[in-house]
Length: 169
Image (tube, rainbow, N blue to C red; front, side, top):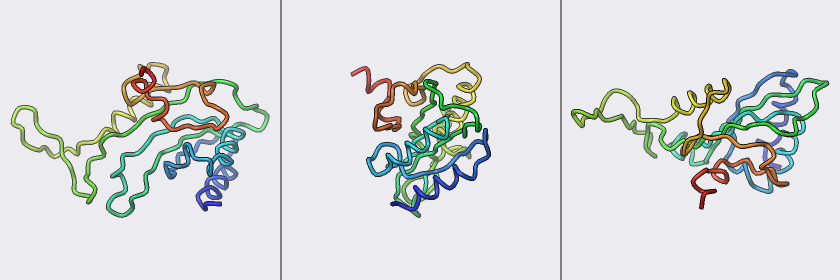
């Protein structure tokens, strides 16, 4: 059993009823058969709030492991698992650095020169998640929501499977 599965399970156990957890996990956590048992534990004890696929360069150059961010809320002791609810999903397409860790800056539209601001979409994803929580959210190409009922028996929660443009095809 991969150690991150045990770590995730322990984090859930330590979480207070009603408590929330944000954790970085390998992207394979989202849809591989290996991680199915821990996804079952996740859904039996928690409400999945959000899944965000991190950009491939997020932890470069120190590791090449693809990662995701999982946000959950542990059910209260007397609370039964929800049958259906919205889950926020996003895919980060730029993280403000290249694969060697060299910063990538936004370009000034007027001059074409680099600015002092890193070129990333993490603020946009955060703002979309806040709107999602407040009920004021509109799906976009890489930030959207799905219903828990859309998950199959494998409980695959990779946002790539649910991309609006992918599903239109």
